[in-house]
Amino acid sequence: MQTVFDGQSLITAEAIAGGLRRGKPEHHGEAFETARAELALILQTTQQQVEQQKSPAEIVRRLLSLLNALRAKVHPDVWQALIPLVQNHPLQKYFLEDPLTHWSFPKPRGYSGDAQLLDYIYCDPHVA
Image (cartoon, rainbow, N blue to C red; front, side, top):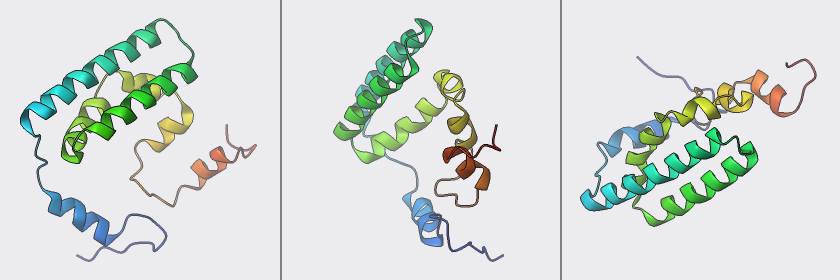
């Protein structure tokens, strides 16, 4: 079976092949455990902010800052291993309340064919 790409998407045969070659990420033992513990604290304090009904902008700003700092100090394989922990955390439900995030989350990275999403981003009056 041959896969045909649309020529517009950032999803390319090379990107898919590169992802397949990677194989199972190495967790780097203690480094992974330390990063996982730090991530758990980040997510726990974020959950507390949600429960305290802090402003969504404040919650997102703080969370992104902490996640970026964590990502900057860990090995890329460790970061990749942490991603599913974040994606499967109960906070996902909170973030999917945002219509843009809810619509975009299930799409593959680089998906180019979503006209409704672009209409939403550019505030088309026909998109509710």
